[in-house]
Image 1 (cartoon, rainbow, N blue to C red):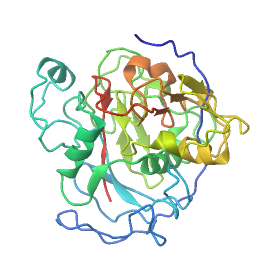
Image 2 (image 1 turned 120 degrees about the vertical axis):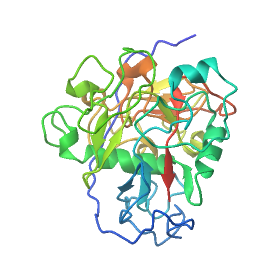
Image 3 (image 1 turned 30 degrees about the vertical axis):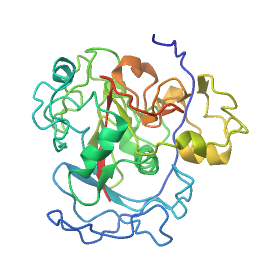
Length: 324
């Protein structure tokens, strides 16, 4: 049964990042750096100089605690899949995942515009799928998602009025039309597959270094690698019980600083700016971005937290890999 999620309010924030580069061999079978752990006291915040095909470099973020209490020294730069991951043989994308559930789940995922997103996969299966891409590849973490989201918010071109905080951010493919995850397209075709072309529905978002990513808001919700975000919450100000909750995290007095670092921006933005909302125990898995089936509350900061993580999968959940 689908719960009625009355629109609440959420988030976004401000961030200045470094765009220094470091050497990177996209064809190497070895990890490019040992400085990419959230627990490393001396991480490299510069974006990688280059990334494998289908991935884009992301500048790091120096904020301790961003996205995880385990992040003690900020988030190093990394390579992000430009698109939601696709099954390499799944030309029909979305529908094939429903009709042929016995398809090869041991395939190596690809980041490409063609095909619908790889859905009907659990979070643990997504972690394994990213790992099959090679050394250093993992499912995106909540800290990395927050790094990307805050960078997107700090980039003026993502705002409808052309300045940070002016107007609103895109929500992507969010309005049920069609009710499925779509393939991507060229970067100059940001409304691909849609029957409308306003800023609300724009499927592309730009990073501060000029790179473009697809469908971080809308299309399908995306798993994060963290399976214990509910344990990291400061339970003194919210989520005291186990009942489903929707939280307004725009107002500074709604969440503690610790919880705002996990999911929120620094800026005073909310649902009016298409940022999303934060839910607790509405869905049986922790995810970000939200999907087309409840897209009116989607946004780059939309977050879902759950205490029931094991084995969940459906047609509205996909994943995105990173190279550390």
